[in-house]
Length: 273
Ligand SMILES: [Fe+2]
Image 1 (tube, rainbow, N blue to C red):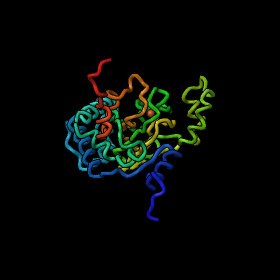
Image 2: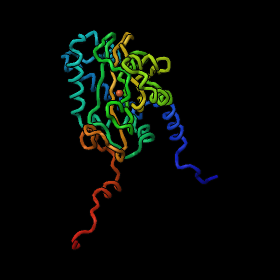
Image 3: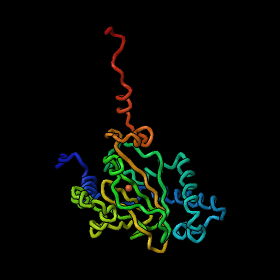
Image 4: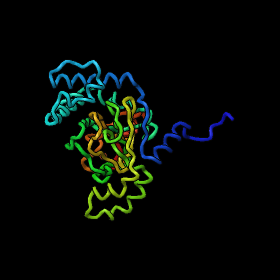
């Protein structure tokens, strides 16, 4: 039959079902050449900061940054790369382009994007950059968002991050008061058996709802994690947090012509009251 029976394209429906059940999807990036070029830029900034020559193998270089940087200097390096990358006008558009198809299918095509892309570097056995189990909504974040998490090296097991799938998070959320004074360690113990340790190789992007419980632990692998993350939300969704407002924390990135016209519309004027 030539007629169409669903408003939703089949591939988008399958993606949405997977995302809704698990709370995350992992997909190859939309533009591998752009990812490779972006990673070369990061490596270039690292070498500039450290005043060393560019390496032949960027993945091996980043994986084993501990060979050239002591852990005490790591945060200075991270901040230097974070600031320099975020100052580049191509950085946020390129970052978005890497997972555009997934973000548009899951969130919409009129989007607002966090004003900065974050950078995490976690050396093996470095306990200075751990993120306890949490859901971002606990900290006042909008529930109408996804996080796009992008590895610059192959990330798996404790070198990656963990998430409690969406159905499991929804089941445990009403029981949160049982945690009591036990804090996040008690919560972690309650859900530990159901946590998924995400295998996110270089060349893929993870998109997840931070309404799901998630976090990381001490990196017990033999190589350093390098990952970036940034939030995306629908342009026309509620913005309830005073700090996480549209126009400052979130910036519109793909406003469509009809929305611009609609927002600029003024009723006819000049009439007497
Ligand atoms: Fe988070």
